[in-house]
Image 1 (cartoon, rainbow, N blue to C red):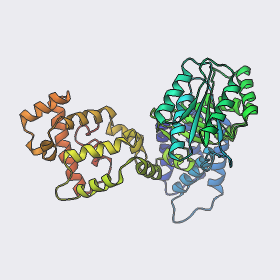
Image 2: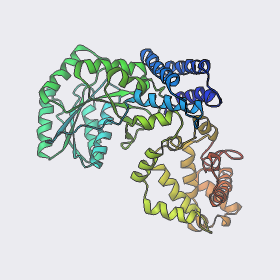
Image 3: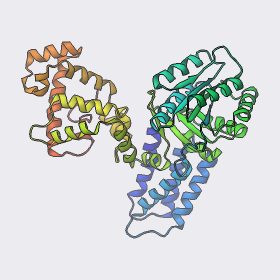
Image 4: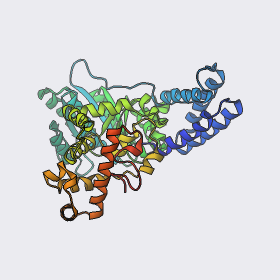
Length: 448
């Protein structure tokens, strides 16, 4: 997430943090580089100017602390201003005192609105908010069927009237159905358009007046940069947005949308989509994202994700065995790998670790497909071979390779690197190169 922005912004700040004395000219030079980085990340020109003015004012007007290097204090100022630019604090959903809470999801076609409705329903279900979906996109072919399918996957109620075009009537009847089902939240998937037009806005205004939603959330494609800001402004002026959900943030988004939307509309970003799976929707926390952009890590989100997805008893068992005299065997390794996979794409998980920057991830050459290859190799082994890899001779390696559909060389590489990993875990090695997905002498275990 924001790999290029993060790398370039951190590089600009590192030129300043290494200085013992921070002159006014050095600060101005650093701010010029930060300005270039933000503009190339598609951040609004006006917001960039205001951001740098605040940073410069604080940097020159703050009394320097003797115990802290001047460059580090500047990083702290940039961090604080990034948090402010992103919305300052987390903005949770507002729930009605008397249910159901009605949430309208609006946006352009192709922004991922229907999928986001399913993701949000799953999150609300886990939070005991009893969600209910209403299919109000009567224009896009198969939109109703898609939402009904998603509702089945999440196992929540869904109101749909295929062939009916009375949007207001569909939503009113959907809310009534949700009340009968004792739902606490109603997610209305409204129709999108290829662009903002008067007819689209009139329909949404009429729907807003008819159902009086508690939340109006814009679902915007995070990869569209300044277009997302323009779209958000149009919807906000017409409807009065209460929040934004940015999708496709796991891609190569430049960051302009996330860094500009709040400043332009004052509508807080409430969630970000970080993948295609239904559980890939995270609450948006400005302070944590600012830390990730400045490569300070996001341990809190990593811990929360681990708590939600990892089997604590199994993880504790593996941890005890890892430091024991016997150490982990390949069966344990397979279990640990599956636990790690449940937390999301490996690159995203590593990116939350403090000090791990995009260049390190690129050097480690993390390859998600490699995980599947390793899993196939381990599953091709017998239980005895997994427990004692020393049993695996040449003929066994050939059999394992054929069974996994991989090469003998890959089997040899896995066994060699697994032994290296065992030694590193017992020795308490630190750093990315010490991890099984790191790049040691040759490709890492999860590298290419």
